[in-house]
Amino acid sequence: MLETKTENTTQVKGGLAALKFWWLTLFFCLLINGTGWGLVIWKIRPSDLPVYLHYNIYFGVDLIGNWYQLYLYPAGGLLVIVINYLLMFFLYRREYNKSLIYSLGLATIILQAFLLWQILLTLNANI
Image 1: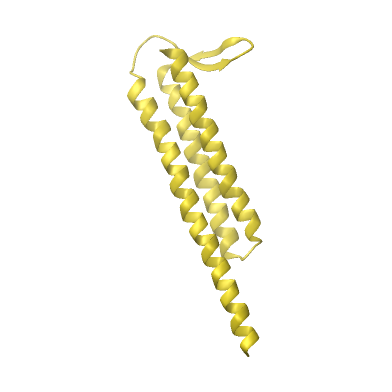
Image 2: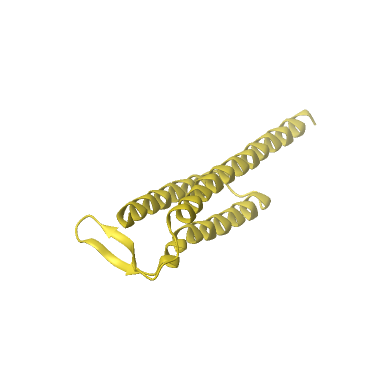
């Protein structure tokens, strides 16, 4: 009987750690994505002039479009957050391997950091 209680306690602690990790990574992902939204809203104003949408170190500017298309970067990041965190939540509820949950959370943070970097470089090319 004691072993069962110890095993249940271990499972609950591991589950709580995964749930805390879920909330912590969600907070950082939303913070990074919100920074991207804020930068795009702050720097880009509606105009009839085309803006640079993508910059490549080999070819320079390789994609030009309308000002509102710059909002696709943070919107895509937000879509990735929603999909990954719903997947993480369902994996947590089904008690899958916790390392998959941790990997999804860290990959989402890394992707958001790369998207923020892309937004910064694109805005810098436009100014």
